[in-house]
Length: 260
Image (cartoon, rainbow, N blue to C red; front, top):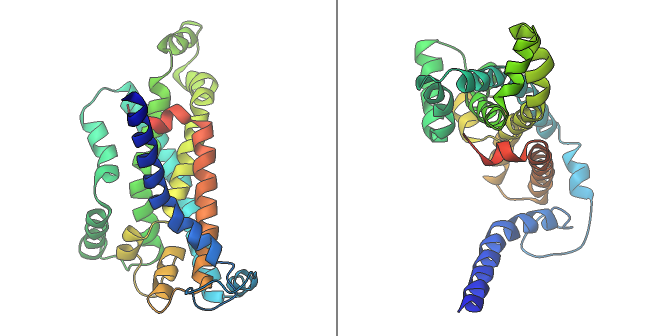
């Protein structure tokens, strides 16, 4: 009976992972297809990557995505680190609610809420700045969760010993706390960068007319046809995202598995 259950579990797991990853493998494979259509495999080529790197609209969209991701991850890492420390140190119930709500909220609801807030409350013209603020808003919570989880696994006696030895609160943070939570901070920054660079839903609502990021540019291209150029940019974006996720998981594996 146990052998049958084990075989069934393995078969189910393989089927689920195949359902998730075979489409991604097809996208990568057909980015090298020597044909404008994805109907059949014609031959191997790198021409679509050359075309991609000569596409000015795609390059501009990529530059916008990278700029937004770098700034959003930097700001959200700073704010998220402070929020994570505050949630760990001060046991106020309202703090986790305020910090984690953007993480738990459905993206479409958050996008619509930010759109209404920017346009009707702030009277702000939608553009790269509004996208940047929106990305910082939902990235802060992810960084805070990772930093808080990192702090939760530490021995509080370390910080008490530093204070007993005469260290000021700032010295305790700079010489003890920050070096210990640094892997979690870096992991949070990488996670924020990853979430920002491939976000579509919130960006779609807050970008405005004429502003394009990589996900928005890909969406506008696939409305016409899914060419191998779309597969090529999707492959590069997938590789970057996967690499950052793996790096973040290596830096803070416990933090990424826990929210408390």
